[in-house]
Length: 118
Image 1 (cartoon, rainbow, N blue to C red):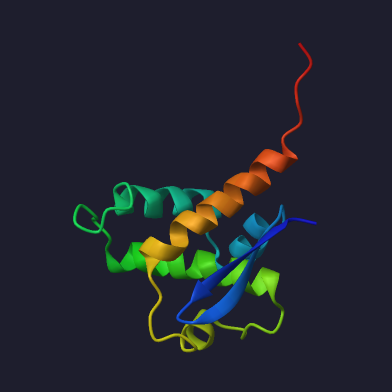
Image 2 (image 1 turned 135 degrees about the vertical axis):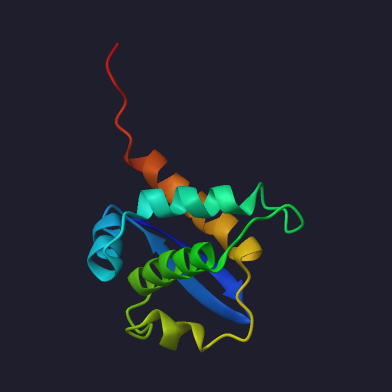
C-alpha cells in the first residue's frame, strides 16, 4: 500500500510514494542501498542549512536518484530515466524536497513497525 505525498516542484505537483518496495526498486535500478545513500545525503546536508552544507555532486546525484524512484513509484507516467524526469524542471532544490521525502519515508517506516510484546 505505502504512503504518498504531493510536493510542488517548479510549479508542478509531483506525487512521491514510499512503500516496502522502494529499497528493492532502488537496488534494482541503481545497484545501491537506499538506506546508506539516504544517510550519506542527510550527513552532507548538515541540518538543512545551505551555508553549512557539504553537498558534493555525488550526494546530489544520490538525492536525485532517491527522489526519482519515489516519484516513479507514485506515478507510473514518470519517464523511465532520472535524466528525462529531471528535464521537466528548471529548478529542483534538495533543501526543499529532501526533508519532505525523509518525512514521508519516516512515516512509512513508522506505519510498518510492529509493537513488541513486553
